[in-house]
Picture 1 (tube, rainbow over the protein chains, first blue to last red):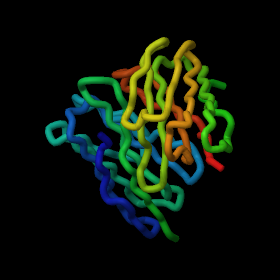
Picture 2: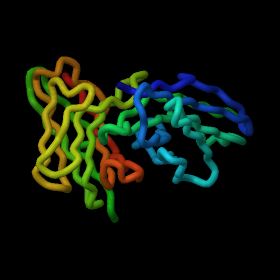
Picture 3: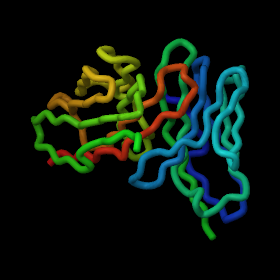
Length: 110
Length: 114
């Protein structure tokens, strides 16, 4: 089952903030976040692990609530380059299967 | 440079034909994945492989087949049984399951049935 992302789309002006949420019905080992520009490959942003470890870009932050199996990606002081589709990917505790959500389309205007 | 390569970038297929999409990586990764991308549906997992000579069905495996005879290669065959194969296909690889590292994606193959 795919994780569920919300919102489906966000429109911002440069400098505004946004939060993208991801939830799973299964106990998770890790949550991944990627950004995809149209027609291109998804690019890694961050990985959050059960137990609190995080790896990723300096300018992007995220959280992982292990009890609720939810993660949030925080985009602050948005730039035009932040535009794209954001995907969360989840890896369950019980088996190594990386499954992605339906994506959140972020548009940043000048 | 290390990376993951998909070919071809564009592929046209006649109805009733099988077609094979190539995915090669030189990252020495154990795990490889195939995803299908349709507008509004995100990335849906077709098949994944955690090690050579082993692979597992994902969420939408019907009409597809794979092989993993070499560590670096994970080809996907779209068979005539796949009722709506027109889509963007992405291959990915990672160090391994539970390795807590990122997945690397290829540039994708856009398949169109004509």
